Length: 374
Image 1: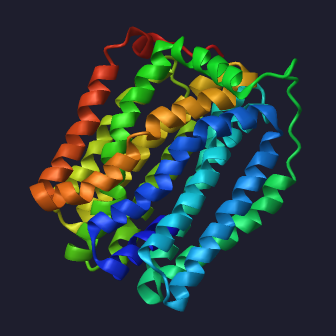
Image 2: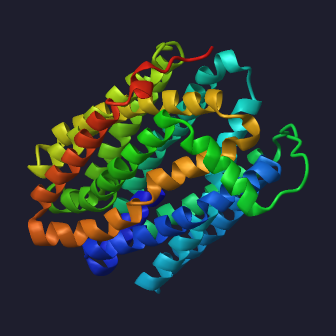
């Protein structure tokens, strides 16, 4: 619910696509800045407790933002500052959560575990996007954000109940030493850094489409939050159906399959660029969601199988840094670019930035030929 609620909160407050981009960038930038440190501390401390601390901070930020909106006193800078707090806490949650997964099941069924976890997340996204669209349309964006804040607090009880085995670290080392060790693991694998570079561009292109131009096009042509909520729901339905498929399908050359699955992500910006009829936009979102989940499950499985567990959170942090580093730029730039060049040209450019880097990654022999070890 929260991204949809925040998008329409800003649009209701100022009506500016550029302002929406600034607020979303304010959330993303601290994530990029702190994610490497999040990886270090997730490899040093019990990972589930790092997740608990992150959830508490995120919940407090969301409850504060929602309260300001409901009281009618929210200012743009306040929403941006609270979004930044949320982004900083997420920088610690992501590496920790990634490192937790291989402790839960034996390696031969790690892909099924990833698929099941992502299936549960995406199933709740269906409910969240649908309910978010209804809540925003029927009440206000602040209600959706408050409910999101409550969900973070509830999550603390579940995550805090986990029991994760301790990983001996040997002698104490500095943060810089730990960062260097993680970097060594990251740069030694061509398939890893090549795909991360690809997603640095792809994510920057798509985040503006889904977070800024998507809600703006929906408000201008399809009546507002309800249709955009339906679009996000269709995307999540695609994710869920594919997740069920990935419980069984285990392609041998999994990175090649994962990379080929990225091309259909260009369909949504293409559909929005005309814009096509709302049902076709929804269908494009469904197809994109289905195929991106193929990538997500196989990618998670690949580096969980290939990277040593005691360094997994740090490598996941480098993955996140490279994949997310251009996203704040994309969020800030997409509004002004759309106003200068036109929304259609901007969306067509976003589609091209999905297709071209993905085609270039397939030139890597490791990406085409790496086979799963189990």
